[in-house]
Amino acid sequence: MASRHVALFPLPFQGHLSPMLQLADVLHGRGLAITILHTTFNAPDTAAHPEFAFVAVADGGMPDAKDGLGKILAMNDAMEASGCVRDALAALEPRPACLVSDSTLPAAQKAAAELGMPTVLLHTGSAAAVRLFRSYAMLHDKGYLPAQEHELDRPVRELPPIRVSDLFDPSKYPNRETANKVLDMTTDITNNSSGIVINTLDALETPELEAIRDELGASGVGVFAIGPLHKLSTIGGASSSLLEADRSCIEWLDAQAAGSVLYVSFGSVAPVRREDLDEVAWGLANSGRPFLWVVRRGLVVGSGSEDTELPEGFERVAEGRGKVVRWAPQQEVLAHRAVGGFWTHSGWNSTLEGICEGVPMLCRPFFGDQLANGRYVEEVWRTGALLVGKLERSMVEEAIARFMEGEDGAAMRERAKELQMKAMEALGNAGSTQLAVDKLVDHILSL
Image 1 (cartoon, rainbow, N blue to C red):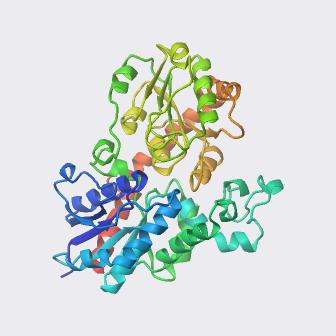
Image 2: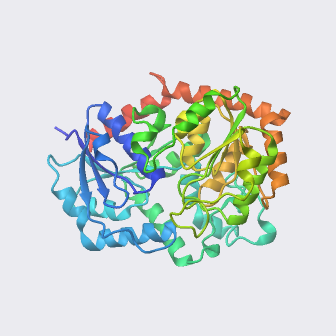
Image 3: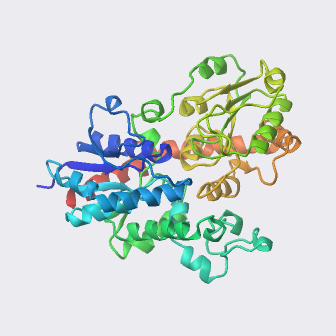
């Protein structure tokens, strides 16, 4: 009889850890025993999840690399060199049916392969991002990359609605070799897996999922669209968050008019330049509209873990109309009746959370798959708008006015509610997401 025990290994960053814990909860709800392997860096709160077993894997501390891609690469190298993941997997009893690994941890997949253990990958981005990152050979062959300044607005005909400006371009990265290695490893790890889980739903990315299934189906790799995970799981954002939320913002929202508040958050890792932060601050202050702004520690480039200082005079101008917190319970905020719009960095988790609550989005992507996510919000789902170009307070003020009160904003809100309904249908008893969970459990038990 196939083992009903599954091991899972998340990448230790907020945008990856939460979806993996949520997937673990979904599988546990279908009768599978769960063991979470995790690094000592950004270790999850084990006390918040008594239904799971946890095994810490020695990672040698966080690598010294300054950028996210460099850290991921260095972490994989350290794990592979030490053999710690293989040892941890070999010690598990009963032997897991498979390892569910983050798609950026090839060291974990190699460790499982050495033990003859199959792997299933969790892609924490969109299906569009999976397809895009598997297309980089084509993008170079067709001349889209390296990107030329005069061609940034050129459509990528093979991957609509993507434009050249939306592409992750390794040639523009400080360490091109590192960037290319990360691209290569995410493609290789997918090809060597028995299946992939994508945190999305069929109705949201139908053509993208069809293309991925066509490409991977011939090699026997199953593709499971199981999302939005945060709605499918009973694990809330607070119990999987690495940052402590300031709940005073909920009481503040309770006192605001319905649909009046612009919620602003640039996620847990995106860096903001000092001059851009100041322009955002004065754009919000001068807009005359209520806003809730997440200004986490270390938000400004080079500020480390220090508190982020707002420009002098900002608090006086925004007093009584704006609230600033270090971190917010985002899912609860987006579901609040007072929130009428979401200014986001377009991380995939944030994008899904906005979609599920029917909140239109003002998108200011920073890097990676955020660029493609923002493009889809504006051009495919048409539930928001991209905020492009140099940030200036007058531009910010005008964009907020159009978004929160103009005719364009009203149309976006209507479409956002329609997209919300599609997400809810997918999560229903006979919905596409529930059927995909059934197929995934059957797949795991067949391995």
